[in-house]
Image 1: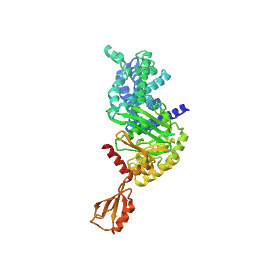
Image 2: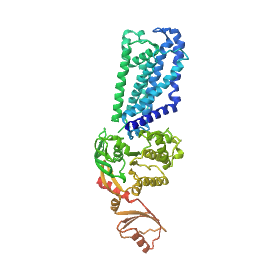
Image 3: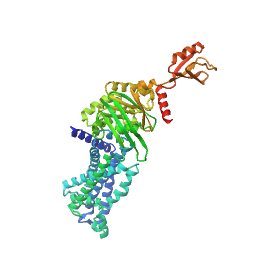
Image 4: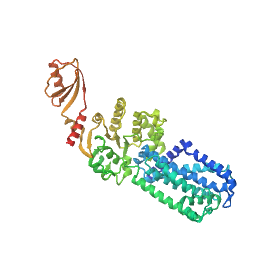
Length: 257
Length: 305
């Protein structure tokens, strides 16, 4: 009986989240597809043809997995951070706080929305990539698994950002100054083998590097670091960020007086 | 059965401000209860705690026997909240807002649609169901929040200034609606700045001042404490000399308008008889302020010393 109530509440939040980003698809779905298409065109086709091969693959083939995952990461994150912060700003988060919904259902609902948008944009970008290269996926199940896991991870990260945000500026600081550098320096456009030893070691401290590496393995069948290391980093950060998110929602930090 | 039981409820904010200093409050099932207080008195904090929007510092809150600490979800199921500020998504459609709220309470979609239709029709918003909520007028937005609060059929409805900024006609129709749902068994707690509203609707009243309950009684006995009523008289013709009437204090507003404070034991009939004897014709009469307003101010002044 109780579980049925939770399920209805979860479906309601997830449906509302999906409806939100679909309603404003020009702001939410289109930009990543256009930006990534430009990356494919400029870095992949125009510059890539002069770069040659990277780790035994055409440069275009090499960057496709990283660019797809970049779209998943940034969309999952920005969906939750903007939606949750808007709910705080407009006070309609109170609709959920007064209702008999446990914090984990609220968390799962917002994560569902973030993952859905990440997957949808990821799928669009994957389709667009087929216009530029013959993409063959080495491990499709693993690819979808990494899609989902990174979506969950960055949705939780977006929620934490939104909880602490006090203005709309605060929801763009982390994506601009933290997330984007981590993604760009996480091996989207290059193999860390190209870096001097010191910077290779620095790159290993970047968690996004492992996620892109694992994802690239699922697509190309080749990675820079062992898969176990990649999945361990993803699992560690998922547990950490979900734990923090849940605690913040349970305590009502940033959303209750 | 008590609809709401509050014992020694305290709330201190991080900046050291003490909003509630240990209040006690009981609301009986089926009651129409007024919670009054000046801005910042602590009434919204108390309501926020009961409806789980504010974390309490200490104290006990029970709603229909469910302890807020032990059974928060059971407490939430009993309550419908109409907050002071508009707190729905301005971009969502009216119908979607109500449906989503039903979903948060675990009401399956088919039943949610039925309930939303009933509530929106009750609040005269059914024709507006497909409009974005930001397109609604102020009065409609207030009614939308009432429809949303009723969608899960709460046993306790909390109205935090539900008629603020609403015109007189709509306010009166909302009063009738509140009376109807109260008569049908829903317990109602009302905070308002329109004391006439509390006087017309509520059977019991508590007044909060600076985080303390300074009065908690039934409306009838509170109003019996009123010592005088204030009237404004419109005279037929200008008069410069003020008459002396026992038990009445007359002051001039302008040459054809007087304010008269009439002692309760004297009564307004005595005033009219006396004026008639003096040959003074009165063209019109209206209340300067309602009785509750006077009492409210008196209690606050007394508290401030």
